[in-house]
Length: 205
Image (cartoon, rainbow, N blue to C red; front, side, top):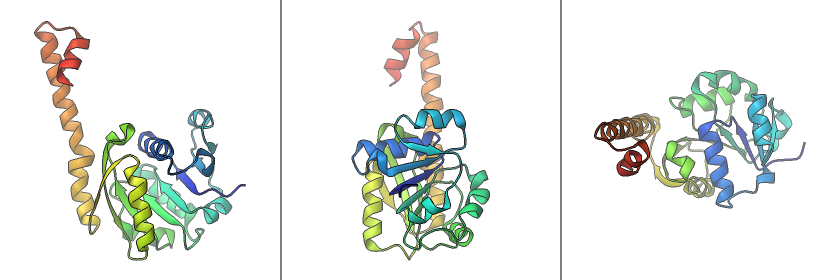
């Protein structure tokens, strides 16, 4: 299989948002991206823009410059075990899995170049704020590259460690949900006052 610059393992809401925004910002070309997605229905949609396959291809993994881990945290163990010991030492692994520490990632992968990122749903509109932290083995050049990629879908905040990532997840990851809930209540209250739904949504926005 052709070598890929960027491999996304998982292509749900956040994974697809990140990849699409990176391409939109011309940080990468669509042909340089491989998506690993086990849902046949999702793969059919993905193939309109990117190469997609169901299973990990370890030869492709070894040649990748960047691997994005965009699976659900509960799937982390199985995916990491498949990748364990099969990565090129220079490959940069980026994880957006909530609650999965750098120490766990490096231990399970047997790999030292890991960056942990916490973006939020605003990435779908290119307006995320993304907190991130890197292992000591990531070079200054790789950190700069990381910043550029993250800026493709919003603004960035570099933090010192996993504890900070976990704390900030509550603010920028889960926090927006409370704003949406409040906004929804305002929409419903506006409708109760006699406004139609379209107008109510416009007013609250």
